[in-house]
Length: 221
Image (cartoon, rainbow, N blue to C red; front, side, top):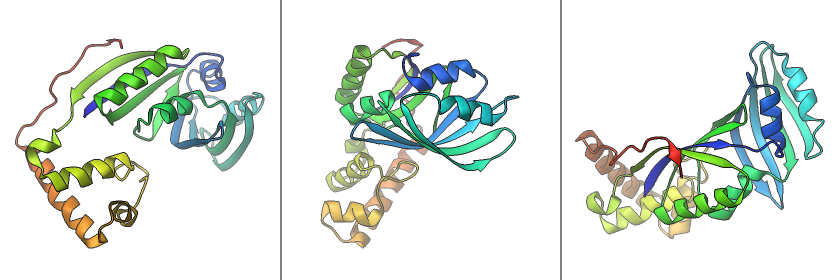
């Protein structure tokens, strides 16, 4: 497993790339997002600096790819919205590679910063997908994650890796502990106990001085 910090450069042909460059001082904080049948649905916080948020939302609604924009909260420098849009470029890449990213993430001036933890094979697949797209990207940092098989039992490692794959440690969670237990065909109490003991070992290993294997300077992946 490796953890990676990436900076992506979203092309102008993607509406969010164009919009975020038109309003470079506005932050589009994606709190949750998913795609289905080529349509992306996102829960997004729009944070402005000196610009009326309504101006940004009005311009957003003018893009052909944006179907609906529903405002939940509105303030002088902040709007919380849910939107549906066609051709979600970033989400399509994640769907194809199966790589989970940490939420929320922000889009500012056409750039996106992603934090993710995955296997080296999936990271390679992600890099290939980004290369084929029009999205430029830079690797900010990359480091080895804790090697579970060195500090956990085989059963603990199996449960922790399943929890990661199913988004149990994501924010918001991709599954509940009960759902994870059902997937693994075990009692919820057993799943809870295994996770607790595994997490204890991981935390103690980290506290003892297990540091990232290396930090890589900014470069093209």
